[in-house]
Every structure is written in C-alpha cells, then in structure tokens.
Image (cartoon, rainbow, N blue to C red; front, top):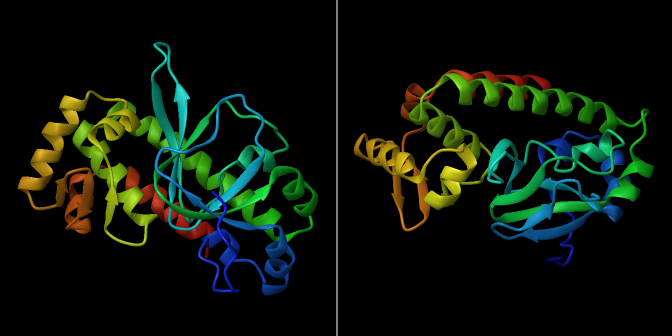
Length: 237
C-alpha cells in the first residue's frame, strides 16, 4: 500500500542514510514510501521482481522451498539493507520468496528505474557491493548455524537479529511463523520460549514478542549472531 510521501526527513534505512546528500537528492523522486503489512509477499520465487525495497522499520524474510513444499528462511533484511538484491546483480527473478515478517514501512523503487540509476560509478553501487557480501555471509552463517547448533541457540540468534532491525524491543510473532522461519516443529518453539521466559530473557504473549534482556539472550545464543552483526557493522561504517 502506497503512503503519501512525507516532507523531507532523515533517511531511516542505513544504506540510503550512508549516501552523500546529493546522491540521495537524485534518488528521492524515484523512491515511494509504502506500508509493509505482516505476511505481505513482496515477490514470489522465480517471479519477475517489479520493485526493490529499502526497509525502514519492517523486517523481510527470504524463504526457500524444501522438498515437501514447506518454506524455510535463508536470510532476513531490515533497515540495514535492501530487498530485491537480485535486481542489482542484473537478475530479474530469484529462487527466493520475500515475505514481510515484521510489519512496518519502507521505501520502494521500480526495478527498471533502479537499474537505470545505479551504475558502477554511483556511490550506491559501491554500498550494495559491500551489502551483497554481508548478506551472503549472513546466509552462509545461518546455514552453518542451522546444521550445528541447538534450537534454543538458533531461536536466540533469530530473535536478536530481528530485534536489531526494529525500532523497539517488541514485535509481533506467532509460534507458527516462528517455527516456519527456523524450520522446526511448533512444539519445539513452545518449549524453548517457555525456558527463555522462565529465565526472564523474553516475554511472549498473544503473538507479541518482547526482548527483556538482550545481553542475556546473546549469552544463550551461539556466536553466529555476533559474527554476522560485526560483519554488518564493519562494512557499513
């Protein structure tokens, strides 16, 4: 859903915020502020990507289909990045499905306009090269994490990564969606959430997740969270 473009204000997406002011001024007429509702599909697997998105306070999951036709998350994008990176790589479609996991707002641009504006000489091109690296690192680290670490560690990693991408320590999250994102049974999520609540690390009620103790959650998590965060911060400074 399109929203009226508000008066100029500080850019809230970290990629756009890192651009020189004159570059942002050239991009601004082609950016449209939109609402991103929970579970909205931004594009389907193998579907032509019509828009690219720069999330502001929403979080988007990239999903892949496994053999039994269920979906599993392979990566997530928030205000640190861009959704539709395949367009930057001059690929019109992607094997991933993109779905909004935390509702909010973002800036979008038509894919063909984006391709015309972003050339190898532009500052945004250089930023997106670095972002491509960090997203690849996140995906590969998540794959290793899912293979070697416990459900509890993976839950903590996912919660911390999501919380880093939203403006508060609270966000909507159903057990069904959480289990799907991690590729585990819903009963496993129930058990882990109960333990984390008992330890007063989170509060989880009626589809609302609240992070009460981020350092405590990180202590329970594996080091995958810290590795990905450090790489993202290193390449966006």
